[in-house]
Amino acid sequence: MTENPSARGPRRDLAMHNDWFVSGWNHVLPRQGLSLTLLIGTACQPGFTGSLDDLVHEIFNGHWDMIGGDLDSALTFSWPDEEWDHEKAPEGREACEASRWEQFGAMLTTAGYPVPTTVRDLSELYLTWGLAHRQETPSGPRWSMPAALPLPGDLLPLDAELTKLLDKIRWTLRTGPLVNTLINHLVDDLGEPQETLTSLDRLADATSLDADDVRLALAELVEDGDARVQRGQEPADAERLDAHQRFRLVMDWEHLHEHRMQLSLTGDDT
Image (cartoon, rainbow, N blue to C red; front, side, top):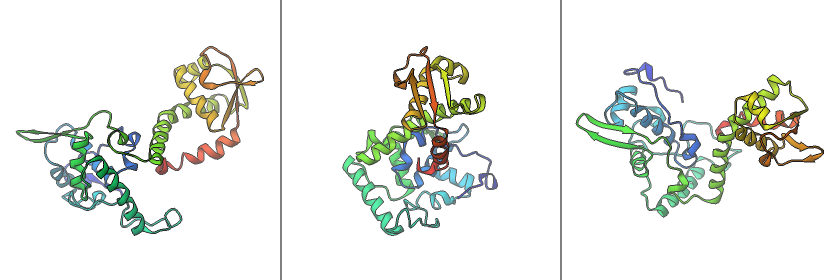
């Protein structure tokens, strides 16, 4: 569902909040949470004063497919025109949608919040939760968002499975770029060595990371089975290495290419 805002109304680039995917709200809210965040992020840009309805009219002539039309469109957990994945959800669209609404409604009711049914209702919850702020001025509403969004678990009673998923996502997004930087050095600069004698300090100099970030990246590679860290003939704990300590980094390139590179293609699930 790609939109071309430059084709309708004045040119205004859509702006997504940097913390949206890290915070994990996209795994908690109905699908329109993503597009609503885009809309509010765009409303926060300098030069705009007005309601979200005004912005939809300005950019999309009043109708935006990504929110289902306008702010009074019904919230859904799946897009009506998307091809349904019966292997992933064999119960079918209607049963899956009903189950998601039951879980979502119970979570909000337990926390004492009204269950939104429209995009407009959800935008009001954004204000209640502090995901967005709206200040009334003589020239109209002005919008802003905090630099770091409140986390879903700070506001809602998440179950253990969802909590674990969001923790994993945040950790992966934190360590992923560090791991990629380290892998790029090992591949591009060193030519995929089976073993390398090195230290955190040396890797930090070579990658322009600091030693603590290299330690995190190494720990991730070891945890995922892509590498081993040894001192002498004994395994070493990557998280306990001193920055100057020499160690042997033993790579399992076959495992890394088979698993890590494949996982990088499934961003929608991460």
